[in-house]
Amino acid sequence: MRIAVFSTRPYDQRFFEAANEQYGHDITFLEARLDASTVSLASDHDAICGFVNDQIDANIVDLLDEQGVRMITLRSAGFNNVDLEAAAARHITVARVPAYSPYAVAEHTVALMLATQRRLGRAYNRVRDGNFALDGLLGFDLRNKRIGIVGTGQIGQIVARIMRGFGCSLRAYDPFPNDNVRDVGVRYVDLDTLFSDCDVITLHAPLTPDTHHMIDEAALAKMRPGVMIINTSRGALIDTPAVIEGLKSGHVGHLGLDVYEEEADLFFEDLSDRVIQDDVFSRLLTFPNVFITAHQAFFTEEALTNIAETTLGNAAMFERGERSGNELTPEEVRGDR
Ligand code: NAD
Image (cartoon, rainbow, N blue to C red):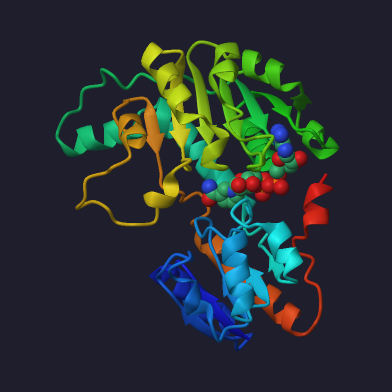
């Protein structure tokens, strides 16, 4: 199958080429992000492969359809960037990688918890600078702290298991509670109770109209002073200016982010030679109690291997007229648990 892979970095190519030895697809690796100005690069391809910041809206879907593209095979779990209704209307199959390594993301979530409150970025720079003073590095024990997990799907569940090992008390909110999660010792509560009762709130719900800006001024007002907020899900779960106000007042004690609402203009690029134009993001960088990584939670050997194998496997099954089970239809997504 001829597949145009957009937003490719050298590491994508490495893992895709290794996985393709078993599939033999004809792959074009493109550095360009998929948008109206680059969509013509998909001509002569049966499928395109997109990543999290490729905006595959109705207009792009129409243009893909006009070029004869029959499949969108996403190399991500999230699919909020694809207009599934438009794809279905054009009979374009959309598939994703539902689980490549939830461990990668869950473990990075815990890394952010530790990095923010133990001030690891500051400590690392200090020691390299010959400054061995501890002032300003005071943290707290996670043991006996109450962790609130928003969304107990694959990643949220693993976070629960890891945090149980830390000796934390676990609360969760999910519109679809799961008995396996209760068995780990998690108590499901409503969202307001989770906000008001937890020392750490970690977000693992997908981005949907319901979850968009779920952490806003009103939600923050319900939280404990000094609360730690961690987001490795999608940036738009958080109303960033509202959280900045919380950080300025001291109400938000720690913020750990792997995702940011406007990340498409920043993440996955080396901008170290340029002036960052996003004032909200720049403000976030000024806080000593904020730790940000650039959407790297998924970025492990194991995850990239699984992503490449599943993405290309989805395409191979589509080519054979079979279903992989990883397809996304508007009906399935609307009725999704
Ligand atoms: P999942 O589908 O297994 O779990 C999501 C859970 O959220 C489900 O249990 C669902 O019922 C729940 N949910 C839905 N609406 C909710 C709401 N309004 N409030 C609370 N919970 C709600 O997904 P997953 O594999 O655990 O991934 C979670 C998210 O993590 C993905 O949607 C994706 O956006 C993000 N993600 C980020 C990275 C990264 O590198 N940072 C990598 C993979 C996934």
